[in-house]
Amino acid sequence: MANPSIHSNRKYLVTGGCGFIGSNLARTLAEAGAQVIAVDNTQSGVAENLHGSEVQFTAADVTDARNWAPGGSLSHLNDIPWDAIFHHGDITDPRHGDDEKVYQRNTSGFQNVLDLALKRQCRLVFASTAGLYGNGPVPMREDQPNHILTAYGKSKEEMERRAVAAGTRIPVIGLRYFNVYGPREGHKGRAASMIFHLFHQMTAGKNPRLFEFGEQKRDFVYVKDIVSANLCALTAPSGIYNVGSGVAEEFNAVVAALNTALGTDLETEFFKMPYDPATYQMNTHAEMSKARNQLGFSPQWSLQAGVMDYVHWLQAANNQSGVSRSL
Ligand SMILES: NC(=O)c1ccc[n+]([C@@H]2O[C@H](COP(=O)([O-])OP(=O)(O)OC[C@H]3O[C@@H](n4cnc5c(N)ncnc54)[C@H](O)[C@@H]3O)[C@@H](O)[C@H]2O)c1
Image 1: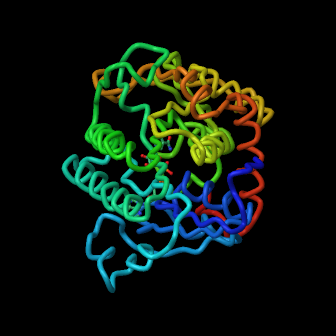
Image 2 (image 1 turned 30 degrees about the vertical axis):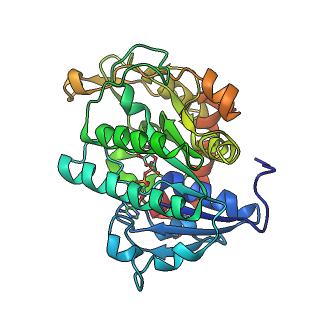
């Protein structure tokens, strides 16, 4: 998407730049001619997500204060006049298993990046999550009470709290992503989107498998829309914004979209949901008026169009050698 905020002389830092969303964003910024440095500890993401791009990659951990100190692997970032910093370098699996680690690492990494933005007096855009809404009422509005289900959600809530406090000194924009899917998510394994997993089941000729009876709903948002929202955040006022498609779709609709995109007619097999319903979001749906009016973001991709585009990408990647890890 063309964006007047990106110019060839702009400098952007993308943490988590080898990850799913970070790599798509970093590539888009670099394709527009900006200078982009991606920092990633490759705990989850993979450097090949940046292959073929002009993005510069620094391998480092943003949570380790020693890396930011003089002589550390990230110390040079303190001297660059950033136009904006995009922070996506987190532990991203909501079912990680070590709650203390998720909370500590996500909040300390965020604090280090926030300190850099404050030092440089530059704009900070960071990834929050619709997980904060838990099983709260739908459509979900930014001003409704949080309903935290996981340590991951707790870490994002704390990041938002610090962001709001800092947002009077520099522009700080938190984007509450809903369920993101699209190219370059394969490294996430079980935490990759259900669209990714169902694609692989269905292209292997297996019936798609869903929790009984596929009526759970999600606001699925295509990663190209997520990148657009980040670009909108380059000019938006400080705040916390929903970034979804604005539509809640049943899991059954995902299978239908995949059957259409693949030209198949595979029947769904249902199985009992293995998760505790108390900690599982049964229905997410973004209320998008704040994002539309203040962030200037309008989602462009329906589930059906996004799945079609993504399936074409996955099929093309499958047909190329040496890209299997991008799947
Ligand atoms: N994908 C979604 O549906 C979704 C939904 C809501 C929020 N988010 C948020 O979006 C952001 C990006 O998520 P993603 O889906 O691209 O996941 P991802 O796991 O692909 O990306 C995260 C990246 O950060 C890197 N990383 C982790 N800890 C780091 C550290 N300490 N130092 C440096 N790099 C580190 C990982 O190696 C990985 O490349 C995260 O903040 C996540 O919480 C994603």
